[in-house]
Amino acid sequence: MFENLSERIEGAFKSLKGQGKLTELNVADTIKEVRRALVDADVNYKIAKEFTDKVKDQAMGQNVLNAVQPGQLMVKVMHEELTQLMGGKEADFNLKGSPAVILIAGLQGSGKTTFTHKLAYWLKTKKFKRPLMVAADVYRPAAVDQLIVLGGQIDIPVYSEKENKNPVEIALNGIAHAKSLGLDLVIIDTAGRLAVDEEMMKEIAAIKAKTKPDQILFVVDSMTGQDAVNTAKAFNDRLDFDGVVLTKLDGDTRGGAALSVTYTVGKPIKFVSTGEKVDTLDVFFPERMASRILGMGDIVSFVEKAQEQYDEKKAKELEAKIRKNQFDFNDFLTQLSQIKKMGNVKDLLGMLPGVGKQLKDVDINNDSFKKVEAIILSMTPTERSNPDLLDGKRKLRLAKGSGNTIQEVNAFLKQFEQMKTMMKSMQKMSSAGRQIKGLPGR
Image (cartoon, rainbow, N blue to C red; front, side):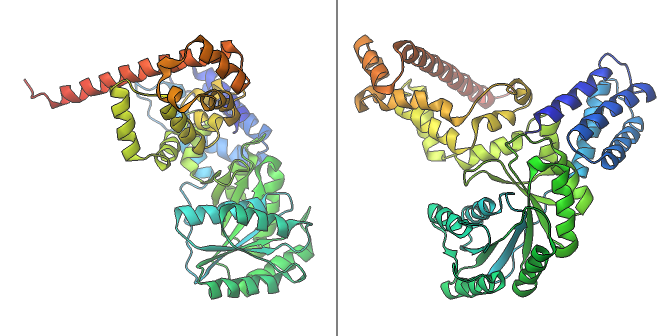
């Protein structure tokens, strides 16, 4: 996400390379390029100018240490100001009602229904809520059916009244239904339009007045840039919503909405969505997003995603197998599955400092694993447990069975052996380190 903006800002910092200190002249040159990059990313010119003026003032007021290069100092200042521009800190998400009610609003095509089911899943799995989704979009064809299908995929009930065209009644009846089932959360998916109109505003305002939601979330398509910000302002003037949700951040996102919606509307971004799958919803952290925009990666989010898939017992079993050089294809398949559960591989690698830029033009997705999986799944259980059994005849059978060439099978098997050797070496180094730590001081 934001690859072009990141590249432009990094290019702006190049003018500071080789400079001994920050001066009025070299800072002005850098700031001018940053401002152009922001405007090209569809940030309103007024916001871009005010932001870069702040960066310039902060940079010129810094005490430059001998150990810190001017470029590094500018990155620090930019990071702090970008973080503040996007809200400063993670926004609260409080739910108090019984049941708690969340109202979802936005234009048609912004991804409201998909977000509704992602949020329901997130609250069920991360916050242990028992949600009910209410299908209150009475205009878009198949909107109700879409939510029912999505609810079935994650085992979360959906309340709907296909013959009723009164969304206020549907919402109130949905809340009553949740109470009767003993559920503690209701998420109401409302109708959108292709553009803001008075009828839609009156309708969503009526739903708000009658349901008294704990949270109102406005969903915007991040690919629409400044238009999304203007729409958010129009909705906020009537609804006074609690927060913004940015969808489609995995697409051709220029960054305008993420960088300027909080400044313009005065409401925080609470969630970001990066794909169609149900588990591609994340809480928005301004500081982490600023790091990613500046090409610094996002190690914290990467570690959190890894920890979600971490099983301490399995990790110890795997460590023992590596130590004994018994890592086999079953173990490899398990590790592959855990990596895929963490999310899109390219997005994950983009969280590592310096890696995102290198992967800009590289096509990496989870389908890249299919060939490897096909090879392993073509093996017999005995072959998966005993990699040394794979002779020429067996390899030929694997190639035919997996739809790969014999060269591709050999290449994978070679990589597998190299990986085993590397894991064994890393395990020895780790053990040696633990032994050295245990030695008494001299």
